[in-house]
Image (cartoon, rainbow, N blue to C red; front, side, top):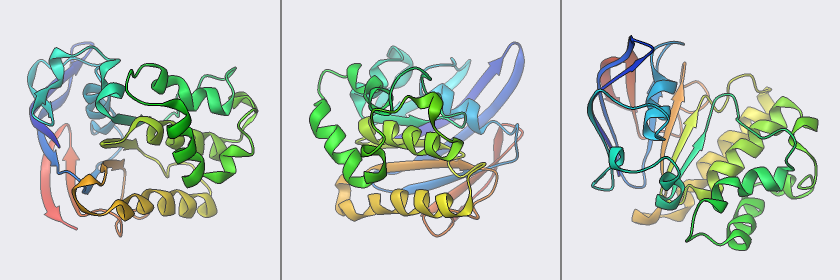
Amino acid sequence: MLAIESLYVAIQSVQVLRGLSLTVPEGRMVGLVGRNGAGKTTLMRSVMGHLAPSQGRIVFDGQDLATLPRHARAALGIGYMPEDRGLVPDLTVEENILVPIWASKTLKADARLSFVYGVLPELKEMRERRALLLSGGQQKLVALARALAVGTRLLLLDEPFEGVAPALSSRLADVIGSLRSGGGADRVAVLIAQSDLNHSRSLVDSEFVIERGANRVAAAA
């Protein structure tokens, strides 16, 4: 589903990714583990088109993403949950969830909202609340919901459990784990980036370790 091939990415002349390679097969959950500053967020921002690689390729379902504009990711079924949540403070919960759907010509808002609220019913109760009035943990849920709304084929989750209370971490793990219930090849592929896999080791099928922007090891979970 997603193939990262010998990727090199620099930010303001600083080389962050140094030949990183990994794969996320269709319907599988893959962990990307590394210390802060190792390059996890840089990889995800590169997949989403926010950063341009100097070498290597990012291939999604056989297509080189470098040929596409940023907004095309939503139309391809790629959902992204950034570490900093990235919500629009003055928009409501529901409007934040809808933002990437508005960029897609194929997804139906009513159907995707129904799916999201089915997975995260607690958000339906606060759908009219502005994002700036939410707690940090609630904002994490909204960021996950927004990714789920468009991530029909691939989800990129950047530190989903970081800074979250234990009870909410368990809730997030349950939601992410429930994606397996799709069964067969139609399950969404998931890449979870974390400093460690304490919260998600039971979820992932395999893991890659990133160190100073390059692969250290790839091993089965």
